[in-house]
Length: 569
Image (cartoon, rainbow, N blue to C red; front, side, top):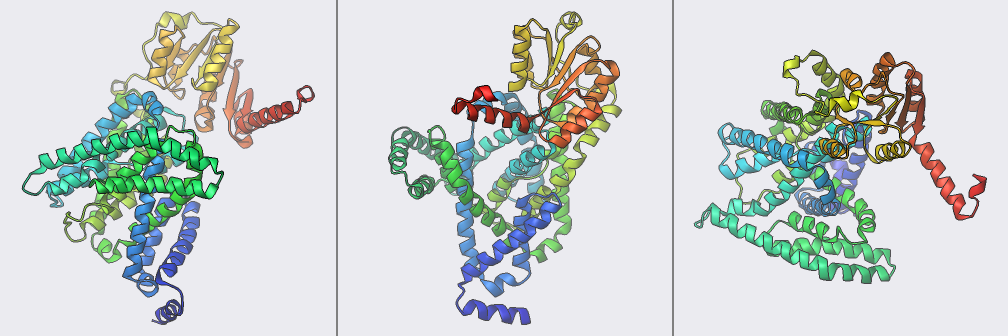
């Protein structure tokens, strides 16, 4: 009571309720974020917990009240629109083509099975009607791209096959949720006299018409507008124009009875191919982060901790079922697609939780939806809990994957080495083994070929391996962490092994395998940090190429070249 009596006069004395709530939110976010970063948790979880604490400690009523809560909800809507706008700009058809096997096979299988299981469980166990069961099914099938990508980067496995599969599945999820957002209003309006089918058809027709209008804007209006604004050289006007485009196209979608977030995504697509894309991304990113923070805090503000405590068993069951079920499913799909146990485990745990759009979908369900008491709050709490669990569980991905590889029966294994002409590999002598066929691997293979040096590529991208076979380049579709791979690659007869990707966790154990089979072979590795370079050299690498050092030398060389001083380098 004393604390409440102290706060209330302060607000009434001149601090508006909205200002007081924002101050409380951002101070709380900073504190919560610092704590959770120490625990290696996602910042999104910190935002959610901050809102949860404010709403259930009594501070919300003392500082702001219901009126400010509604204002925060409105600002959170802007955050979601900006998120979709950026997602539309970053959407890459080229990346989709490159990962099409993971996206359209793995992603479609994951979405279909997860939605079927989650939809049936919500309808029969939670008592939800068909429309709400569909919403919950889609929400459960989505995963957190932001969390998984950040964790893969921290682990140094972002270039691994497991991480690439996770990215492909995430791209498919993004495509699916955009289409679903088009159909979402019709799903609830279809309860009227016209029936569900006609309403969905009308809604889809509106969506097609809206996309056609957006294409016309992208081709004839938006480039000219951005060119005119850029000519003024006013940063403020350019930023205002970008935000105006996002909100304007979203408003156009709302006028056609479509989702605001759909409009924002299409607006992002409309400007994704223009020359101003990167400047737009740099200008809009701080605004997106600010309003998205408000959105996740607002999700926490909507959770009644009393209801959550009463439904703790349901929340725990949903979160556990979500993580375990999706992880087993994605891991099985990854194995079916030829990934190793380690790669499959990395993809499975990384995508095992719900995602940001799961919360967006539940929070923005049309007003026509009637949720049973406490069900939506329990679902949102469970999905937030699953997101918080991933940074903890991902630490066990490699140990679990390694254990599975060493203890799984051979008859259960999916062959990880693509069939290649064995005679061609057996004939290789004094050759180089190149692990990874990204830009560095391609350049190395090309340079060796120019000098008449034979090489063998070890790669985990099936499409790349097939292409190399067509080019008559010896290649194995295999994981360098599997000991038998080195025998297949003829490491005993090779003169060089080059790891062209900077992943210390994957390179270190492979060095030991290589040294056991060929103590005199030369081993080249890439790494990001000097401490990792020293570690790899101590383990047996002959040369560790430090990415930052090489980049620094290249920058110095080009800079001095601009002053005609290249001879002094």
